[in-house]
Image (tube, rainbow, N blue to C red; front, side, top):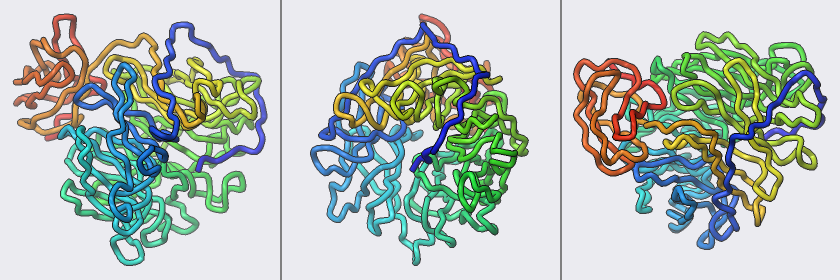
Length: 484
């Protein structure tokens, strides 16, 4: 699980600004009967509702659920795991779910399945579950166990990581077809002293598909040896091609006193093409509260901010997630802990510019949750997030955070070839009059107030997609990639 920092050295050189323009609303207080310990924030699907998982709890089985949440805050248990004999459907989902291009949800469970090695699953919005793959199906679990971080690529396949199993029993990176055929692309800890890295926390073992078609990610352990972390180092950032060619881009704690950060938890690609992420510890000078960094795709790292730089660590300790606002601009994330609670245990939500200026948006006080696990931006412009603990029953919460950002649209997938049908998510889409792919008009169909289907038109080029509505033009949260 998340590293705990034994001591904190407070800094006095960081200015943290509290925002008066944010609105914070607790939508759900879990009470174990409807789930416990939500994992990663809920995601928006084609029906306009939000879907997420809890690691445990529920009145049916207690082995975790997938829940549906309406924008108004109504919670419904969509599926309770271990509903099949011997938990063949999986148990303890350690990640969130992700919306697929086909309108269904996809995710993983850390345990259960036919071999008790975890599963990859598909789930309809009506609650029908199909197990795509049961891990540890190969001898000695060479295909891995404890899967995590499933994403769908623009090629239609799924990619993810496992924490255990593989050739060295330190996890794998895999590809999974929609038909359930698995290919191991890389066995982690394949290099001496685990220089290529491995993970110890399934919640942060994930990949992101880059604009170049390759995948990028982090390992929270591995790389150069460093006493600060473990015998096998403080973590790495890496690139892997769809064919499995693996490259370590950066080894953390390469600078004195881990000024460049240690134990990386998150990586995304910004609108400028750079990779951005956070580390859960390290930072300068001697802060050890974590960092916010920028990394080129060739491996050049710039530390932009060191957390725990304000008396009492009000700016946060141990940042564990990051997302960039739609259309580029500032980043938003959560710190697992902060200085407003006893033993720094409650956590905070922050906004940070690409140059590292931090605005503190919300600090938790246990009554409204504690120990947040991430943020996702809804198409209305607001953010949804979860806390793993706190709330009325100390079972975690789901919250909404408004910052005044405008609405946008999102495409599933975010890249495709000419002639491919794609799904567009949004709000107030019912009376849309035009869809354009980087100024090239497209044929489209309005399915509902929250969904449009459109065909990538001939002549389209990579760039932002726009939807024209009576109330204005909505722009996609990121450029749509036209694959040649």
